[in-house]
Amino acid sequence: MTDTVSGGLEISGRDLAGAGFRARLKRFAHWLSQRDVFDLASCAALAALVVTAVWTFQDFAISNDEGVQHRYGELIIAYYKSGFTDLSLFKLDNLYLYGGLFDILSLGLSYIIPVDQYELRHLLCALIGIGGIAAAAGTARLIAGPRAAFFAIVALALCGSWYGAMYNHTKGIPFAAFMAGAIFFLVRASRSLPTPRMRDVIGFGLMTGAALGIRSLGLLLVGYLGVAILISLPRPVIGHWRERARFALRSMLWFLPALVIAYLIMIVAWPWAALSPLNPVRGLLSFGEFHYHIRTILFGQVYEMADVPRAYVPTYIAIRLPLLTLGATLLSLALIILPARIGGIGGLQRRELGLIAFAAIFPVACQVVVEGPAFDGCRHFLFVFPPIAILAGVGLSTSIGALARFHRSTLVVWLAVVATCYTWTAGKLYHLHPYEYLYYNQLVGGLEGASRRFVTDYWVNIMPEAVEELHEFLDRTEPATAQTKPYRVAVCGERVSYEEYARPNLQWIKMYDWRLADFYIAPTHMNCDRILAGKVVAKIERMGVTIGVVKDRRRIREQEE
Image 1: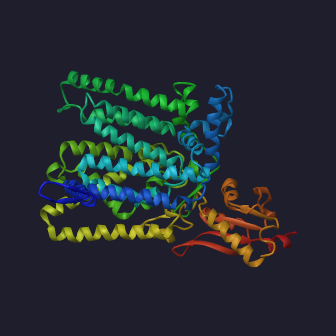
Image 2: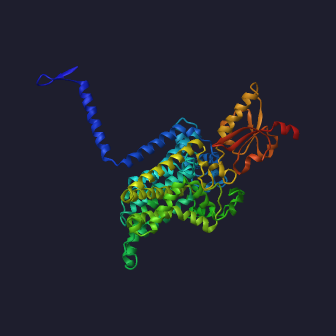
Image 3: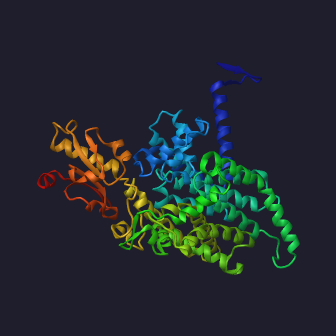
């Protein structure tokens, strides 16, 4: 079909469509040309993370706590459905001391998305974790521009403690991501104090409420708000105290809606917090008094969780970060301290970077000072990793900017070092998959140096692979009865995780019956694999390091009988 126009020209519909496409392509190319290359790189990196999460979320095991956390979510919903009369949630161990926001969200989604409930939890957790990376990048961009944002993404995404936890640490990662989101809105809001934009106030309230809806440590954000107001006071700080008092008071009044929003979200997701206004504070203080019989390890020395040395958490953070990220973080801290003419950052940047440094250091410092209980390395301090990534992003960006101005030849070498270090780290994480959270840096000799000297697979993420190895062993050695004959299996891990992957004839047995086990599955974490003797018929290894075993105990059991 053609259209005739004056002058006898005929233009086909295909030509018009082609011209329209070329015009749109030209406009898109023009739009791209107006964007900063690091902004585009950041968007591409976040998109790649989303694709990777969707592609790999089924590779990750059910973690030790997930079964009870999922049950806690069910009990919270039952509490509301019963009109607050079903009090079972307050009797489920100490879970009432935590909020159940993530568990409620995952349960709600399970009603409309036909996916295995644990796989859904893992996908949701991963997407929230990527949101935490985006929040860290957004904060770094506010402070030091698009280049810092890109490097913040790289620093956090290539941190094994974050990425490896991002799929099945369904309490620690959502909490850390919401904390990162709250810090982003707080930094934005602090720029217009004492009358911040209401959208930033609301954003801070939503993120703070979400964090409190998971852990009472979200109360730290109220302290961060106070620090943000303090560092934003009109200069000079000394003198004119009435003016500064009015500034602080107006700032606090403007943030009242945020605190109301946060409180409402918290009490919905955390029923125990609604029973008394002081319960969130009681919950926070109670964590310093936990004295369960849980053991942990540091430099090969075993400790009870209540007796760990003061350096326990700082040490684990230092040895779990990529060395380049650790160095860049220390550089950022130096920039805060150094005079502006040397550090190269202005007053606003310095104050905002100081707030981020406070968010990274203060919680760890509190744990050190009060000698609080700790175990599983830095698992309970994942929320300091986004601030650390922000500091690292700013440090790397500042170093690149300084070299670009003064030492261009050195800049090329530095960029090559940065690219090489992070490519090497990415390769390590690739070879660890899906056990990225076992990453250790070269301060302790990597995973090989950390094995049996530091915590490793405390979530027993080896479970799917170990069970599959047991299936293959039985199919190979006893093909006629492999799927029908009952076998008793002792597992150094949680029942819900084991039974998710094991065949029905592989019966999980309780610890007091372990001596009757035909097979034994265990990680090498805390030498759990050495509890029961047996012939090793399968090893789960990464980078030449054994992280879990499957043992055949039948001959030993027969001898004992």
